[in-house]
Amino acid sequence: MSETGIDDLMASVDSALIVVTTSAEGEPAGCLVGFHTQSSISPEQYCFWLSKANHTYRVSLRSTRFAVHFLTSADLELARHFGSQTGEDTNKFADLDHTTAEEGVPLLTDLPNRILVERLAMLDDGGDHVANTCRVLWAESAGSFEPLRASQVGGLSPGHSSEERAVHP
Image (tube, helix red, strand yellow):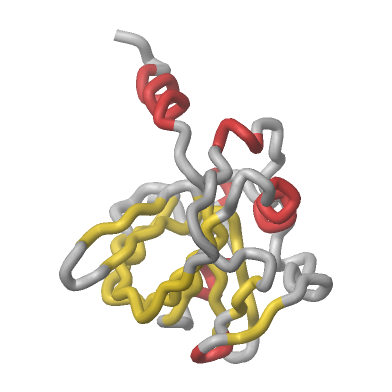
């Protein structure tokens, strides 16, 4: 059995990418996310996993509402914007058109396929990401689209590596 078996499998799955945004105490945050899925039909629930190394994760500890923005194949630059910078060093929203939803959650104008969610539970199982299970509050779509996939952002240098998490198991 190959030691890289999981890498090969995940490359074949080629996950769709999303941008998760949130805000706490007037501090907006957002990051590129590859781990996410619908987790219940009734009631409608969605899960996403945030890297413990990210500024967005630290802001998420003080927030309960999030926007999940679904990227299209035309949104490579927004993926780079949210995936290769860190919120510690830059305001990722400064030069982007956006509005705010409940509790100040940033809604990106250029990403109209999105859901607003409220966290029900957070699970830290000791890995480098933390699971957030959320209730869907509302959803909006601009219609059918082709998602931006992980394979399309190859060569993207993340703002933080997973080894930079604040707490190690």
